[in-house]
Length: 327
Image (cartoon, rainbow, N blue to C red):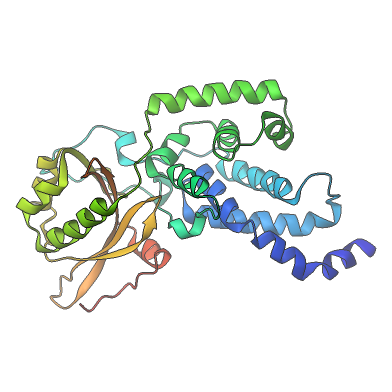
C-alpha cells in the first residue's frame, strides 16, 4: 500500500512537473502525428500512462526522458496501420482552376495547422527559431513520408538534439540501428528539399498588412504585386491545389468569387508562419461566416504559398476565433 500512497502524496508536485513538459511534448507529438488535436490527445494519454506507472518509475532516467519514451509509444500506437497525413500537393498534380474542385477527403487525410503558442519553445532565441522551422507545414508533411519509428529517430536526434545512445535507449534498440535509421531518414528529407524560411522583418510585416487590405478589397492589381508568379495555393479538405498566380486568380475570380468582400483577421502564427482567420460574406446577406484559416509563406518579399484550411468548426476555436462574425 506504500507505493499508491507515495503517488497520492506527490500528486500536486507530480502534476506540476508533467505540465512543465506539455508544450515540448505537444510539439513532438505534432511532428509525429501531423494534427494538433491528435497531439493533444497523445500528450494527455502520455500523462495518464505516466501517472499510472509512476510508482514503478525508479528514477533511473530523467523524468523528461521517461515522458518522451511514453509519448513515443503512444504515437507509435496511434500511427499503427494507418495512412500518413499529407498536403494536397502530395496526392497528385495541380488542377485546372476552372475545373472540378475535387473530392472532400476525411480529416485524417490532412496535415492540420497548429498555433505557435501551443508548441513554442522558451529561452534561447536560436532554439525558438529552430522550433518554428521544424513545425512548418512543409517540414511536418515531409516527416510523414518516414516510417513511424524512423520518424521518431529523426525528430529526437535532429530536432531535439538527443545523442544516438539516448535515442537507442528510449527506443530499446542499438546505436547502430539508430544511426542507420537516421541516415535513411535524412536521405528521404533531402529529397523533399525543405528549406528553412527567413525570419520576418519589418518589410514582411508591412507586406502582410498590404495583403490583408488588398484581399479584403479583392484588388487584383495590388494582390499581383504581393504574390509571387509561381506561388501555390491549396484548400484542405479539398484535393484541389493550384500552381501559379494566374491560376490562383482565376479561381478567386471564378469558383471562389464568394470570398469577395471577406474580412481577414490576424491570429497567432501557425506552424511558424503568418496566419489569418477569413470570414466570407454570409449567403443570407447578413454578417459573415467562417471560411478558412489562411497560412502564408513568404520568401524574398513575396507570398509564395497560401494554404486555406477550411475545417472552421475545429480550427477557429483552436486559434481563438469565434464561429460568428457580425461585421
